[in-house]
Amino acid sequence: MISAMMSADSQAPSNHMYRVKPPTFLTFFTLLLTSSSAICAEIISGGTAMATHWSGITALVIFIVAIVIVSFEELTHLRKSKPVLLSAGIIWALIGWMAIQTGTTQSAEQAVRLSLLHYAELMLLILVVMTYINAMGERKVFIALRTWLCNRGLSYRGLFWSTGITTFLLSPFLDNLSSALLVGALILVIEPDNRRFISIGCVNVVIAANAGGAFSPFGDITTLIVWQQNIETTNGTLGFWSFFSLLIPSLVNYLIPACIMQFALPKGELQPSCDQVVMRRGARRIILLFLCAIATAVIFRGLLHLPAVIGMLTGLSYLQFFGYYLKKTHRPQEQGIEDTEQLALPIPMDSKNPFDIFVRVARIEWDTLFFIYGVALSVAGLGYIGYLATASDLMYNQWGPTTANISVGLVSAVLENVPVMYGVLEMMPAMSQGQWLLVTMSVGTGGSLLAIGSAAGVALMGQSKGQYTFFSHLKWSPVILLAYMASILTHLWLNASLF
Image (tube, rainbow, N blue to C red; front, side, top):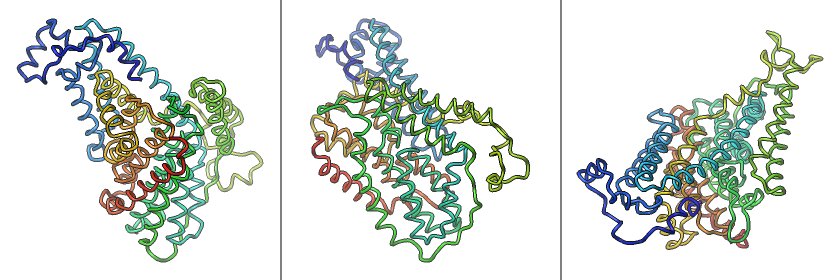
């Protein structure tokens, strides 16, 4: 991707006279107020010379500040899309301004259009997935699952394992954030005053959500991003089924902390009582349609060699037609009739309002989509300037891909995993399938090391209202780090043929 963005660089002269040291504030204002040929020489086709110019340094600082603000979302209550949207606009404004000075506007325009194309494909794909998830939520699929778990009469240890395994199995299809919120709510409802159990249970759910999301293209935003790129590796294309090679390493990542944490659970059994909930009409068929939509996307990508997003949008039409059927056959639920009584009625009843797919589209996580846009365009801008080429040379050529990919996973414990993965994709190092799977797993599971390392951890901290905290998670970090390294070693051994 970088090579496409910076194709004009190969024709740029490499004379050292074009490079300058980072300017002082006086130099900054002097350059800003003049449009001499010295500035034109500074950027040649958006090349790496911009990395040492004040405009490039400013762009890098702006992005770092935006990511820091995003990291403190829980404290500032500022939606994470806002700083990165502003960051993307400023970075490309700086690139555009310098391109005007140098007469390289065509190169900059081609670069930003390519980034927009990649983002548009990912956005539409995520939009379809979120619409299906919202539709299943509206049909009470997830509430019914939570109620079923609640009424099993389990012990603390039984609930601990049930919630963890359920989260691990849901994440590959639902996504790690939604899975963690769904099952985490069950832990908080059953015994709201048992701080010890809630703390350990939430840590378990976060680990299970991140591990389960690592081996499926639909399990996490990062895996979805990687699959959507259709990466050509040094030993073949990274396809849909390639990610499932991470199943056993991901399972190791979850089981090691869970086996150790279970000994810290309180003793005794639970006697929860949750009201019975029945799924609304059409719930099971929507689940089936979602699986059909995924299958269609796989067929479009694997057999027809077309973008997966075309298949997913085709799969959205399945839900649209079924929604039309639900709307035409809608029978409003009468006031006073509970969901548990609907089974005795001759005609299945819905809620008072008929199913409307566009309501489901309107309620998707637009903040997440705008956040991904801001990150994608910001990182693409830094790649166009030349920073990512430098980072790629340091990490993947000097450190080696294995060390670099493990380190990237550790970085994701502090930073959002989406910008971290976008950074790797913009670098686009030449790696084998095994190495690309390694970085996918490390970025996904590395976020479990700290509570702030993943969206699942941040969301559960807010949901638990102080019972699951940064420090309650931190005391289990050594165990999680052990599992992180064990899962990597398992992948290196089990999938050695992919390297």
